[in-house]
Length: 323
Length: 213
Image (cartoon, rainbow over all chains, first blue to last red; front, side, top):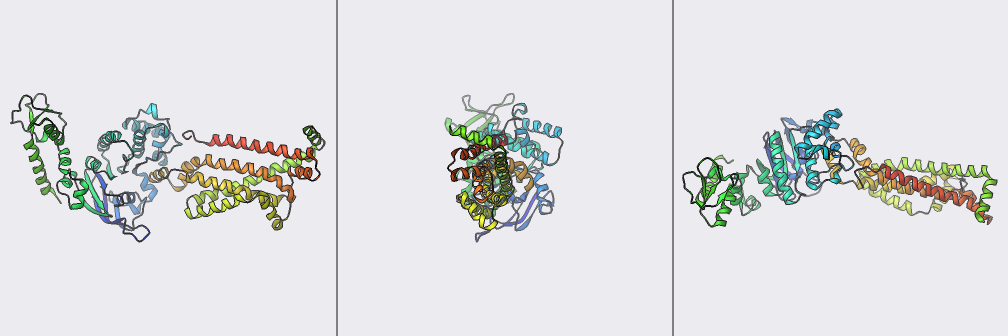
């Protein structure tokens, strides 16, 4: 869906390029997370996709079309854009904010109003209650819900999101991550998502691009990055608990066995638990085996040995799939 | 007693007073219109260019420190006396507050708001018209309010260079030690200034978008 080829951007001054010969492709309906330390070029890369910044060299294509061949204003109306501070227009109502791009595209009022209500409902904001309010009456989380609704208004196939949850408290952030992940996957959007938070990247990304000093260090699925960091930089960036992070990406039920008979007093796990939850439960209880709650079928059992095996299998699988 | 004498003087010279008042109002209003027509576009232009903005702020600040009488006195040797030189000088006086407030209003807008507008595909003109202008307008009106008061009180000094207006009564009153005549100039000027302050204050509240403040 998005092809970035040999992209380079150098800002004025003697410093090294902000983005240095970057090449990567984002498939349709994928969420590509750009991550790296400050100044690694992640935001600059994202902003070149809708020509908020013009590249010095290289090429970006969206659905096969070179973006430099498209008028920047037209291009931006067809690409969703969400930023950390949201940037809602304080003098316009929530409805007027959401209808920004439909208005620019010349939709008639009735169609725009229908779309506003539909989107507010989708981001879990009661349209009747919020439509005519002003941004200053909303909480930070609600503002970003409106920000995302506004970006979705004209149903763009591609969305750019620059640290959309960065200004929110941890509880709101986690809730919005889950919710938007679901919404964006339901809608089948192709997304370029910038963050500096590795946990957010692992959670949101179908692929993660790790950047350092404007260069792409590793580009792979979250499990693969955790199992096989490309170098010491990536290894330290993902953190020393990467085994635990990998376990968090694996669902316990997928790795449980039904051949073991668990002791009657074995600790219980939720059906949706991941292997990290399972390990934590086992360590906490001081036991070797836990049972996953399930009605009907025979009980499924997770043991310390199955967790260890899952990690080893995962690493082998990633090696075979790997780049 | 003094006020009664002033009233008598006024009723004895209705045509003279009416003409002076008309000149005063015309001079002030015209100066304000000219200054607005120059300072608002200049302020908008400068707001988007940091180098120009820096120069404009400094120039306006120098302009603001000049005493009104000095400006009028400087204009006289260049342009002579009468209505036009007075208008020129008063327009100059009204420029700095409008220019500074236009700049301040434009630059007080959160960069994220403009970034979001641009990122969604608004044209620079669209951003100016639909985002920057409505958000800067309350601050711009505060500048107009300051400028209006300055111009109305500054127009008194036009009498010194033959520009006419209510200042004629004041200067004549001072020269002849005739306090009633002086008050016939001073009281209406004060009322005009207070009226302008009130009117522009009301306008300022009126142009403040509902989502703000």
